Structures are given as C-alpha cells and as structure tokens.
Length: 230
Image 1 (cartoon, rainbow, N blue to C red):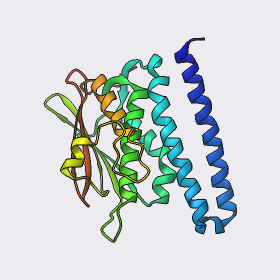
Image 2 (cartoon, rainbow, N blue to C red):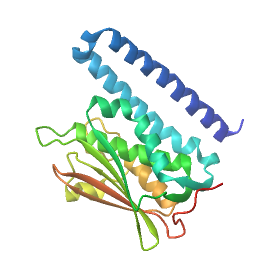
Image 3 (cartoon, rainbow, N blue to C red):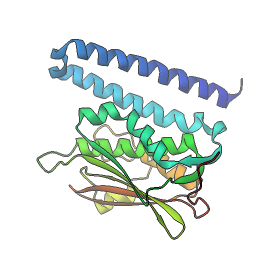
C-alpha cells in the first residue's frame, strides 16, 4: 500500500481517537468537580496533552506531504481557526488571543494550508507553554497576532508574554531535540524552521527573559495580498 496514504490514515485515526478520549476526560471532569483539585488527575491531563502535541508534531508534516497544495491562503481566516482549536486551553489559562491587521486586509499568501496550520499551531503551542511557566502578578497572559505589509512583503508577528529566552537559548531554539520548557520534546520549533525554509519564509526570533518572545515571519514578495479567489 502507498506509504503516504498509510501515514495519512494512521494520523487521522490517531487524532480522532485522542480527540474522543480527551472529550471524555473533559466530560468526566465537568461532572465531578472534585477532580479539578486532584493533582494526579491534573498531571494525567497534562501528560495526555503532551502526548497529543508530540504525535501531532511528528505525524502531521509527513502525513500531509502528499497533499501540500500551493494555493491562496487567508492568514486571518487560518488564525481564527487556530484560535478556535486552542479555545479550551486559552480559556483555562485565561490567555488573551488577539488578531490585529494594519491595514485591515485580507492577507492572502500562496502556500500549503496543512503546513501553515502545522507551523502556526507549533508557534502557538510554544507561546502557551511559555506563558504557563511565567509566575507572579506580571504574568499578563497574552498572545498577539499582527499582520502588516512592508515593501511588498506580508509580515507576520506572533508575540507571547511568556518567560522568554536568553540570547544563548535563542541561538539553539530551532535545533531538533532542544527545548527549554519542562517536558518539552524539542520538535515543535524545528518543524517550524523546516516548513519556513521549504516555503521560503524568512523567520526571526526576538526574546527577552520575563518579557516574552516574538516570532517574525516574512513571506516572499510574490505572495502579495491578493483579491479573494472566486
């Protein structure tokens, strides 16, 4: 049997199964309020979430390789979808998620929808985990998406108010297997870097300890904002 097809099927079934299981966990928790205070239950859910992230990061790039069609993609629409996917975690941690555009848009780029989603999910995952590690009254938990046009390029900034990174950490952040977060697997940002290279997207990171991190993505000039396809 064709290997990409097998991977796609396997990835689809694994994600469906994990989504159903996690839905059951949420239902059980909502019917038994005392579980929310049980440290073992909380740890189990965190471990499950980490497993879900790892499987998604490992399988999705390969599984969608055969269907990575280069088509016009609406970045604002994609980030609304990403925000919806993360709604439960964002609400649980009281993290604000803001989408800003100047000028208002729309912002179309040519690329693979599956790979753009994979890249953005990994960046949001990194931001959420960095915010969760930040303690104290200055936490100000926010993730901000900002889109603009500069000299014919679409520029995307993804900023979080997490724990940030040192200059030395930033030099190694995109290396596979390197993570500076507890229980991090060091896959997410390496996948982001690989997809950015494949799609000719320039990516830059700016971070400061206890202030947060901003990832800037500059899309190729040929990917100008276009009229909505008919």
